[in-house]
Amino acid sequence: MEHIALYRAWRPQSFQDMVGQQHIIRTLQNAIREQRLSHAYLFSGPRGTGKTSAAKILAKAVNCEKGPAPEPCNECDACRRITAGAVMDVLEIDAASNRGVEEIRDLREKVKYAPTEVRQKVYIIDEVHMLTTEAFNALLKTLEEPPPHVMFILATTEPHRLPATVISRCQRFDFRRVSLEEQSERLKLICEQEGITAEDEAIQYIARLSDGGMRDALSILDQIASFSDGHVSYKQALDMTGGIPSKQFAEIAKTLIEGDVGGMLQLIEGLMQEGKSADKCMENLLYYFRDLLMIKMVPNADKMTERVLDLQEFKEMAEAFTRPQLFRIIDTLNHYQTEMKYALQPQTLFEVALLKLCSIPQTEDAGNAPAASAASASSPADSSEIGQLRRQLAELEKKLERAMQGGLAGSGQDAGNRGSRPASRTAAPRVASKAKLPSGLDRYVAQRSSPEFMAVQSKWNQVLQGVKDEKITIHAWFVNGEPVSVLEDAVLVAFKNDIHRETTEKPANKQLIEMVMERVLGSPYRLVTMMLKDWNDSIEGASAEPSKEEPFQLEPGSEDGGDKEPWVDEALNIFGEDLVIVKE
Image (cartoon, rainbow, N blue to C red; front, side):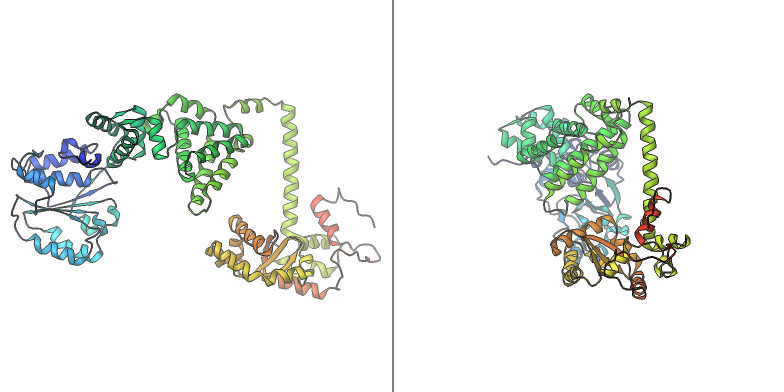
C-alpha cells in the first residue's frame, strides 16, 4: 500500500479535528447554526495553521446532505466527494498560477450559473495575494454582490498585500500559530495511532522547530520516523534537523564567562564538525541569550518562551550574567548575524563574534559571578589611586584632543599670541577653518609631489573601482575626494563637500576603504581626510614662505630668540608651559 504523508493523512476533516483555532471555529459554527453566513471570507495567517483545511470543512458544512450543520458528517455523498475534490461546484483555485485578469473574468462569468451537484457554490482562492491588480479589480464587484448561491473564501499568508477594497468586502479571520502544548498533544495522538514511539523531549523539540505550523510539525515527524524506523528519540531529531541541544549553548555561555578563547574555538570547531551551519548556530544562540535575559528580568518568564526545557538550569546560568552583559551579547550577535547574510565565509564571522564576546566578563562588572566578587573586594586605597590615574588620563586626553583639533595651525595661533612665532605663521588661512585639519599638515604639503604620492595617484582609479566592487554606496561618497599627498603610511584625500567627507570618515566606511587600499597598493595605508579648500589655502601659505629642504630642518631664530619652531609649540600645547623647558 502506498504511503501517504502524515500531513495529508491527518488533514482535519471536521472542525473538531482542527488544532488551536477555537476562536475561528466557534464563530463559523455559530454562523451556520443561526444561518448568518457571509458571502465572502478572508482567512489569513502563517503557513500550516489550517486556512485551506478550514475552507474545505466550511464548504462541506454548508453543503452536507444532513445540514447545513455545525459539523459535516463526512459520510454523505456530498461530503465524501468534496473531500476528494470531485465536486465541480466547490472549486479550489491556486492564485499563484491563475493570477491574471483573464482567469478572474472567466470565474466571474461562471459565478452566475446555479450549482448543479450541491446546495451552494464555494470558490476557495488560495494565496490570493498573488493576483495582479487588474485581476483584483475584475473580482471586486462580484466579490461585493455575488449571487445568493455563491460563497467566496480567500486564503493568504500576506494579507497586507491585498487591496483595502477587497479586505473591506470580506469577513476576516486571522489564524494564529498553534501553541507548543496543543501541538505536542496532537503529535502524541498521531504517534499513538500510527504506531510510532517518541520521546517527550523529541515531541517538544519538533513542536518548537515547526514555529507554530502544524503541517511543518507533521512533515518533520514523518521524516524522522522514516529515518529511525518508527522510534523517534531526541538525539535523532537533533541529528536529522541539524539542531543543537541546549547543553551545548550552556557550554558556550560558560566559556564566555570564563573568557576562554581556546575553549571557545574548540566548541565552534566541534559544532562545525557535527555538520551544523554557522547561520543556524547564530540564530539559536540569539534565542538562547534572549531566553536568559527574559528569565533574569521577568518573573515567571519560562511561560514567555517555548524553548526552556530545564528552568533551574536556565536560572543558574542567567545569574552568572548582568543585564548590561546580556544586552551587549544580544546586540553583538544580532550585528554579526546581519553581516553573515552577505559574507562568503559565515563561519569566520561566527568565530569572530564569539571571540569578541569572550572579553565581556573581563571588561564589565560580572554581577553575581565569582570574578565580580573578587574585583569588588579591592581596598579603598587602591580605588583612590585608580581614580586619580583616571582623572590624569582624562586630562591628558582632553589636551591631546585640543591639539589634534587645532593641528599645527592651532599651535601656531597659540604661539603667536605669546609672541613666539612670526606673524606670517599665525595668519595662515587654515586657522580660521572650522573643519578638523590633519596633524602635521605642513609635512603633507611638503610631500605632495613625492614619488610615493605619484605611485598612489597612478593606482587611484583601481582603489575607487575596488571600493565600488565592495560597496557601491560608499563609492558614491568616496569618489567625491581626490588624493593630494602621502606621508609615511597615510594617504591624504581632500573633499569638495563636507557631507561626503563626514560620511567617508564613518568607522565602517573608513575600514572598508583602508582594506581596499591595502589590497591595491600592496601595503597597509591609513585614510586621512580634509577639505579641498583648506588644502589649497595650505599650499598657498606654503608657497609664500621660504622653501625648505626638509620639514623638520632647524632654522636660525631671530636675534632676540623669540622665534620657536612648530614642534616646540606643539609640545607646549600638549603638556603645558610648566612641564616643557626650551633650551636655545
